[in-house]
Amino acid sequence: MRPHLLSRNAATTLRHHVKRARCFAGSTRPIVTLAIETSCDDTCVAVAESTDSLPCGLKVHFHEKITANNDAYNGIHPLVALQSHQANLAPLVQKALSSAPRPDFVSATRGPGMRSNLSVGLNIAKGVALGLNVPLIGVHHMQAHALTPRLVHAMEHCGHIKPAFPFLSVLISGGHTLLINSTGLVEHAILAETKDIALGDCLDKAARAILPLEAQRAPYGRALEDFAFPEGLSTYDYVPPARRQEELERRQTRWTWSLAPPLANSKSGEKTSKRMAYSFAGLLSAVQRFTSDNSAFNDHQKSETRQCTGMSTEERRDMAREVQRLAFEHVASRILLHLSSGSAPDVKTVVVSGGVASNSFLRHVFRAFLDIRGHSDIAIEFPPVSLCTDNALMIAWTGLEMYRAGYRSSLNIEPLRKWSMDCNADDGGIIGAGGWTNTAER
Ligand code: AMP
Ligand code: ZN
Image (cartoon, rainbow, N blue to C red; front, side, top):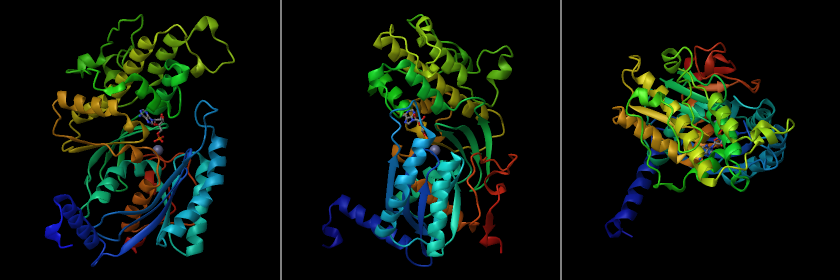
């Protein structure tokens, strides 16, 4: 078929393919990586191909995930997750290797995460790297979440990768709540982090307190969103706080309870409300206090499983909305504080990633919050839901970016339960943890 006979859509697709083909030809060399992610309860494997220099795009050859079945537990049981990795990872890697091109190097999550779970992935990665005689790259899981919008861009286009550094990253997951200034591939500075529990942990436990038993299922954060907005966001009229004072006020409800915004009204007042930190423990305990039936409370019962049977569905729904509104506004408020601090001269993009970033209400709150406070010029990048939660494609992409920059990991690296992203942290951040050589510096 000659191109002029193609429909407009088909012609666009053809042009796209020709551009992508060019992207993988010429002076650039195609590079393939096998990637493994096992930091938590998802066993993830991907094979992806890019180029060793710009222009670059990304071809996905293989991408699968098996999630441990933790239904019988209130959350992730480390042993169940470990057994799932042990049972599923090797067969998944075998399937990937037999259906995709031979990798030029292997990428695997080195940390942060559950140490024994990381070991399963890292040890298989070392074995494959040894067997194929190719390099290994031990990837930082949170760096991978932060680079996900660049991965998405590379999947859709080739050429210069966007967003370009610098950009702000909000990383919100089951174990982390971080606001980060990303100025380069391995240069990240933590601007705010949680001083108690992570946002995802707060939402999971709030869901267990608020939701009727029949609505409870993993992932609990998503169950909380579905319960709060059964018809999507269309029927909910969210009003963002137009001024800082409104953001710090407790909104009354038609019920006997109301929830206070985190870090808003402590004894030290203004100072705490401007602190570049997150806190969700107070919000969660208020929810647990209002929903628990203390007289019927049994000491042996875990606090997060306490439930008051007296609340109507309507009241539960209002509380599910209110806890999400306050938690999401709290996260957004620290972006605003940073933007008004004078140390954020040229922020064009805020990247939001991690499991909680798949929440549609959060996406709506962030956009409305930045718009009403005069920042409609700042782009907010949310990856597609499948790439917000843990996956091996983000590990493949980060491996590819590190490989292109010349980094290689030693075969003696160990998994890291804790590993900061911040170059100024005690452990030295991504590169400071050691175990790297850089071929570009030789
Ligand atoms: P991660 O640690 O990045 O895999 O993210 C897992 C966390 O994301 C868990 O706390 C989930 O409950 C949470 N999560 C997943 N989907 C949603 C959603 N739609 N809304 C809120 N939280 C979610
Ligand atoms: Zn994660």
